[in-house]
Image (cartoon, rainbow, N blue to C red):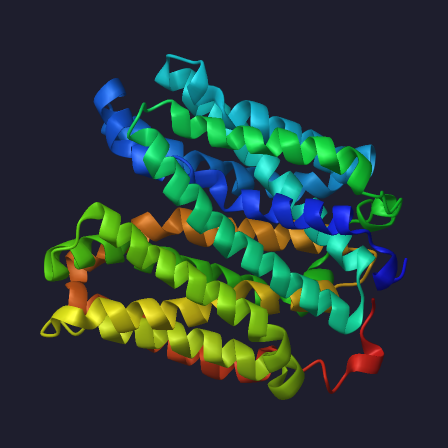
Length: 388
């Protein structure tokens, strides 16, 4: 299938499906305070945010087998159906326990959709067009986050149930995907073979960088609202605007990533990503500077804008077609592992102290950027050898 033969409807389905993925937590984040008032269970309400990530981590190793059994298009449609129906459970359930069960099953749909969408991108596109579309995917993820968070904040001010209605957008995506998505009929080739360490080794570095990058990104997301409120006296609306600016910056960087990869190679862009995160943490460590959150927002936007497009591109290119679906589901697992661990790692800030904690993270990121010189390839040098 040539790049030019992919219909605009198909491209729209992939981009809309990608934008839904960031909605997993973004859609209900503004209503957490109200949810806690309704259920009076802070720990249980916190699980509403973390259970989807835990479900991804637990179920990711088995998703490739499911895709093999059902086919890629059917798996995507099933994932979107579960996403819409289980994601919106807050609209009609009254029990926190039922809501938590729904959130766990909802997490399974996330890994199904992410894996299939990346699998389809790998099949539909090749070469520069693939990297170009992956950049568009990252833009959709960031812009989707902005739109859904702002819309959710407005809905939560009306009633705590209404933000859950946003998940029903997945059913619209499902409807247009029935016609727009074309099955590759190649899922069986990439899911029936057992995985050995020798198969994972070529992409293991990308898994670890993805885990580290997402861990750092969510650490900053957890720290920034408190910092902006305390040091700058911003209201929650103004904090939301500041976070939105960061997402817009990430989207802009993601758009230009494909040009950076072409000019400087994946290795140098990955170093830029990790160093940008390191500078963000160094900014956060400057307790004597009240406006330190603003440069941290800029560096975080740059880092996150580079992270997912380059790593997704590398995993697709380096993994063989035989194991690609399994490699992609593994990447999704590490992606969400970083997210799930962020709140636990942040507890070390109370033990080490904020300044020292941020310095340690920055040093680790600098070491990772140096190691990336060895473990991240420059595909411009090996383009003729890449399996597509």
